[in-house]
Amino acid sequence: MNILITAPYTEEGRKILEETFGKIFYKPWKIHGRAYNETELMNLLRITEADALITEHDHVTAKVIEEFSHLKFIGVCRGTPSNVSLETAAIKEIPVFHTPARNAQAVAEMIISNVIAVLRHTVVARKSLINKNWNNGAHDSYLEFKGNELAGKTIGIVGLGAVGQVIAKLLEHFPCSIRYYDPYYTSDNENYIKTSIEDVFENSEIVSVHLPENKFTKGMIDKSLFSLMKTDAIFVNTARASVVKREDLLDVLINKKIRGAVLDVFDHEPPDETDYQIIQLDNVLATPHIGGATYEVETRHVSIMNEHLLKWVKTIEGNSGRELQNAGEL
Image (cartoon, rainbow, N blue to C red):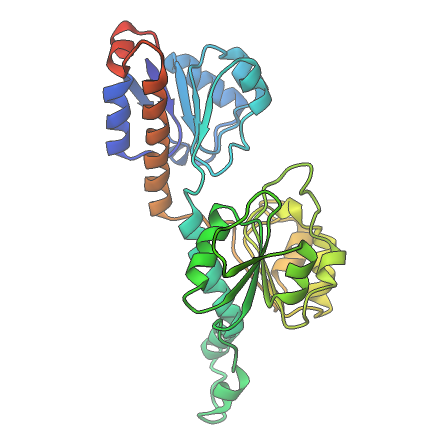
């Protein structure tokens, strides 16, 4: 079996797959400089005579899957396989594996650190210091940049999935109170309050959104919800920009109807002019979609993907992984 791997994958992880399945062709998109588009990916699949694909950001379109319908599986090293035509894969009966929770710790840590930076005016204080504005007395900066602690705040989480659960667990130790909205999941932690989305926005000092992009969530966060927020509240979105109506977000930020926002995702990446209007506001701490950008995330997605694939091999009736490898049936 030939496996084309275009996702970042550790040498140890590749070795495990090689021992189980056969030959590995490692062509990570990072070396290419960007995700492989449809044509480039098809060329790679053709050249390597791949029987399976492990990807991260590449464009695994319906055309790719139809052209290579013999693929035994598609692995996607992402929290959601949003770059794959799942409908086509289902029609062709190709199993698609992905790596939920691979970046949960990374995203949670960045959210907490950036929220604290907003609460403590870290960015503006540093800018003031770099500009040599600390010249009117020892205590002026102490008074000018006095902020707030995260401890004791009520945190509202919209979507208590993998990332939301890690955030909630970490915030317990500050300590913070946790309210959440999730129609599909109920936590067994009795300290977390499950409530309506309106209640989350109205009664939280920090609202963090963790929603997937789909037809139900697109534009879900709008002015009707922003209007419920406290004037000193912070809005956080590190999930998907499309779940927020950015014109409504821009309005509440420009008019100081809320304290500010922590953002890692935008309607256009790279941003367009409207995105930059939001990014450049003084009450916004924006980062260029780097919430999951840690080396540990890559190590973790390899571990999760390999676990899925090794478990899948064992379920193939009447064959062990080694028998399948030797017989070339995979």
